[in-house]
Image 1: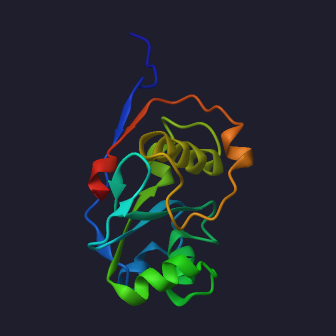
Image 2: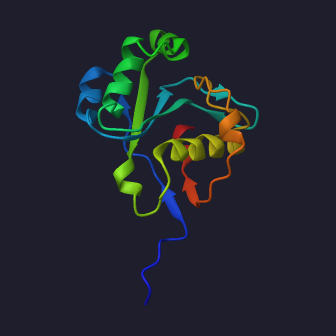
Image 3: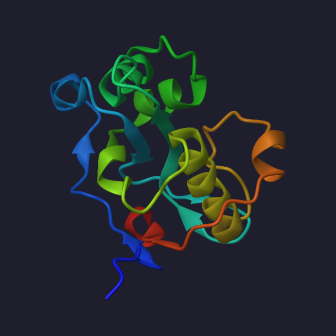
Length: 155
């Protein structure tokens, strides 16, 4: 029997954590994707509603998920959308450790973030509301993978 990569990988998200420094600190030194979402506000995207506000990434351990989330938490990232949503209600986050996908994903972590964002665009009709990317470089890129992402987690 040949040891082949799986043809399909279902992505389920961990228990949500409240968007607070005590929950962010354990993610220092971890590279991967992270997802910030609201407690109760559902955004009416063109196709479906979702509480997902932002998809982000940390490409290396020195600029880890923990440090990126801290930047969003304290406003140093200059993402006014996240700052203002946080003023109005409790936010939550979840993450995906990039190391866990190494056997399935052979591209860069930036490409993985693009894959997730494009999959969200396909299902919801537009970027998450606090992602400020123009998307030109992402939309021109076709990435091959067969992730089945549990976007309903954010409904």
